[in-house]
Image (cartoon, rainbow over all chains, first blue to last red; front, side, top):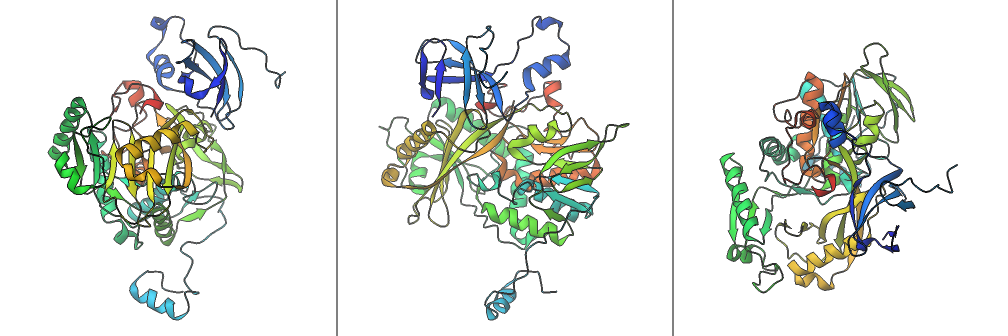
Amino acid sequence: MLLIPCPWCGPRDETEFVYGEAAIQRPADPHALSDAEWTEHLYFRDNPKGDHREFWFHRVGCHRWFVLERNTVTHAIAGAWPPGEAPPRRKDKA
Amino acid sequence: MPCRRYSIWALARNALSNHERWPKAWRSPEPKPAYDALIVGGGGHGLAAAYYLAKLHGLTDIAVLERGWIGGGNTGRNTTIVRSNYLLDENAPFYEHSLKLWEGLAQDLNYNVMFSQRKVVNTCHTAGEREATMRRYNSMRLRGIDAEFLSREDLAQIEPAMNLSPASRFPVLCALAQPRGGSARHDAVAWGYARGADAHGVDIIQNCEVTGIDRDPVSGAVAGVQTTRGAIKAPKIGIAVAGHSSQVAAMACVRLPIESHLLQAFVSEPVKPFLNTVVSTGAAHFYISQTDKGEVLLGGELDGYNSYSQRGTLPKVQEVVANATEMFPRLGRLRFMRQWAGVMDMTMDGSPIIGKLPVPGLYMSGGWCYGGFKATPGSGWCLAWTMAKDEPHELNAGLNLERFRTGRMVDEKGAGPFPKAH
């Protein structure tokens, strides 16, 4: 069971949340994308074995989306922050 | 050289020597510096590909490279359901071909894979589901695939232990059944293919992790692999590594439309036989069968977020158990014996990718989305064909990587581009 630190509500059980998807950067101007770039954005993922940034939704809490950085092997959570904001500095990384 | 073929005579002869003189089922050779082709991944799919490459395409100077031990990955982490009740043109003929290979597999391999065609039953709980299921039934029958539409009364005959009460939370309305579907023994599939491939001269190299893919600096084609046991040259490389497809493809700078997710499964303590078929329900995404040893084998949905951890989380255990006791109330007092989680390579449309990758000489069979076990023979057969001829067979032509660029998705469930939704 994950203990997820919602940026607004604090640490809560995993069961209160819904996983969204990988926190990919939305294209600034979708109309400017080529077919190949659009395909890459829609379907292709890095799928890292390690730190992964992802969108979560606090379904039975504040009903807000946020970005979570979580390790996909150990499930250790490095931090959570509101979407659009810069991630807080990690203590284990310079 | 002792006789390698298994038969009642071999059994009798070896009984006389206390079963101490059985030959090893496959060799453990040192890797050679070069092969005609390499298969990365010694699970059922990789071993099947090697077997069919050697047997049907005459490519015998090949090796299977396995990081751990053969069959120790997802081949040993699934619920062993075999069926071909698919709807779409790209999927149904492929899975039906695979099912036909299953039907002759024990004889072909001279190895008992314990394939048991005990019928796969999929229950419907809503009117909408009933209509979708009827459409699937008709589609299957039109393709010549066996299917039965079962009423609640039929179900009561087949599975007397099932909760068919109209007062239950989500009452069962009817079911789709595939009589030729069933289950097989997972280890025997890996071992049988390994033994068969080895007999055709394939080198099976265990404890050999691929750490890099070498490419020709001029043409860009694959030239070989770097492994923990040295470099091995080969002009053709097939990837069959299940949940780690993204990592191995990335060694050749190929990105895939895949995310890795966890799927849990459970077996209970063994009890006397009470389940006759493999039962699944689409409404709650739950499936259950009873093994030949008497254990109740069950599983449910993905854990829900990207992971390579091979351990499940508790909320899903609760969900699966709730489904189990709702459908089979008598399971309430049963105890679990084992639980495990496998790493599933979930594609963006829920269908696999078998074919060429955009690097000459590189092929893959992956993205099996927790439906890989039933596909083992068909996947190996199609990967072997594609590697031998450098073009896909018509059975796997639609299951290519290009479909994500052209928009020809094979979305069986209609769930959209979300790997966790399939």
